Amino acid sequence: MKKIARCMFAVLAVVLTAAVFGLPVKADYEPKPTSVKAVGSKTRTVKQGQEFELKVRTNPRNADDDYLRWSIVKGKGVVRFEDSDRDGDDIDLVAVKAGTAKVRCKISGSNKSVTFTIKVKKSSVKKTIQAVGSRSRTVNAGQEFELKVRTSANVPEDDLVWSIVKGTKVVAFEDDDIYDDEVDLVALKEGSAQVRCKIQGTAKSVTFSITVKGTPAASTITRKGPAERTILLGQEFELEVQRSYGLSEKYLEWDIEDESVLIFEDGYAENDDEAELIAIGEGTTTVTCTNTLTGKSVSFTIHVIGSGYGV
Image 1 (cartoon, helix red, strand yellow):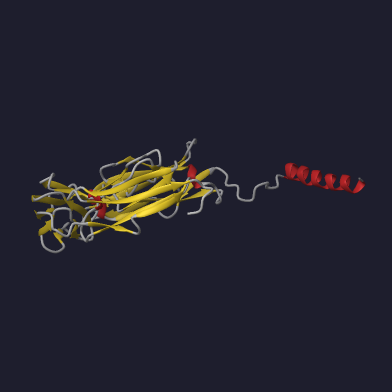
Image 2 (image 1 turned 180 degrees about the vertical axis):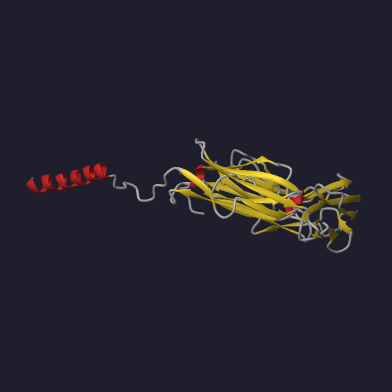
């Protein structure tokens, strides 16, 4: 009993000592910054089109940099942030045009801050853009394809923007990434289209002419794995089809005949060459993947049995 009492007294003594002398209780604790200052000069001179970084140092050094917020307080048309990240002890920017801008880093919830003055000089190098490869392309309906441009070094990739200026029902972008030096598209149907890449803020651009021919006979899908499966109740599993070369996933649609037996794992199936499912009820149903470009489909027969049975 005395031994236990001595141990408890020792623990209490450590706690009281930490409270009195301010010993750290949590080794990885990061306090809020009390001040912030620039790393390097607070005045920078850069050239139009140049990407550059600003950096600050906090006091104390181990302060949590999530308290730091960056903003452009003057000259929002002169410089811009490279991405959506506005927190931290450094920030990436792009010089857009000649002029002067001010960029501030402030400690959130306080009036402590540091401001950088950015002077952007006009670039002596002209911005240029040109097509990589031929500007005339011929593809088949249902085919995925890529267009690419090359620019001068003073053009950041995200200063480029792609658009379909003719034939929006003939071709479509594969995704939302249209601010880059390359873009992925899919041919929807026969016809002609024009796709343009432009340097934002200038009249410089390059236009591609696209001719889409009819669906080739090779635009097919085939089943991967057995046509008939036995699955345990509650089991997650995957079905997959094989696309012919060039056939876009955009044209693949999955369907479950009886949704009391199976459901898609995410509640729906994306246009993809594979589908993830969950067995929710005993029984037999059919899962079909259809190539909407040709109307042809492949099916899987799925038997779901109780978890007490063997597969």
